[in-house]
Structures are given as structure tokens and as C-alpha cells.
Image (cartoon, rainbow, N blue to C red; front, top):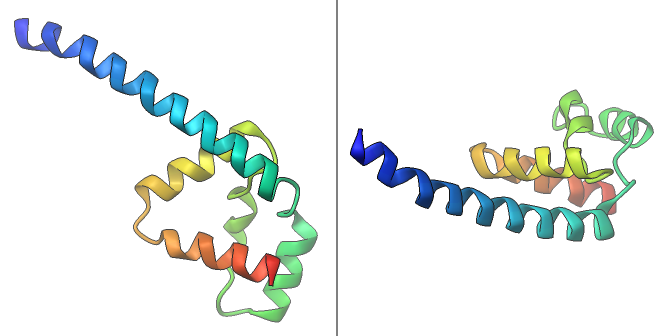
Length: 93
């Protein structure tokens, strides 16, 4: 039990630091990529590249803070982050 109590403060500090970094990167993402991913763009990509595009890409955007944090979290935990980068390459052509 003492070990768990001793780890709470470092874990809390790590969580606050990681969240602060995420907010900074989310703000940068909003500035550069905000508003580019929408249903029209995804549908156009699906018709142009039917084998490469996944319909769930609509949820990986930087249109607001919640979706920005979702996208950053997905890029941190997913093994196929290069698909998200490929989507933005196709959008920006």
C-alpha cells in the first residue's frame, strides 16, 4: 500500500505534463490542420482511392480540441499512425 501511495504523486505529475504537451500540440494542429477534414473531403478521397481510405478517418481531425486530443491519443497508441499521416498527405496533395 505504501508503494501505491508513493507512486500517486509522480503519476499525477506525469499526467499533468503529458496533458499540457497534448494541449500545445492540439493548438498547433488546430492552427495548421483545422477544418480540412470533413465528410465531403473524406467522401472525395474514398471515390479517388477506394482501397486505401477508411471511413473512420472522419474522426481523426483537428477541427476542435476534443477531436485534436482524440487524434493525438490515437497516434500515440495506434500501431498504424502512418495511415493518419497518409490521410493528411492526400488531403493536402
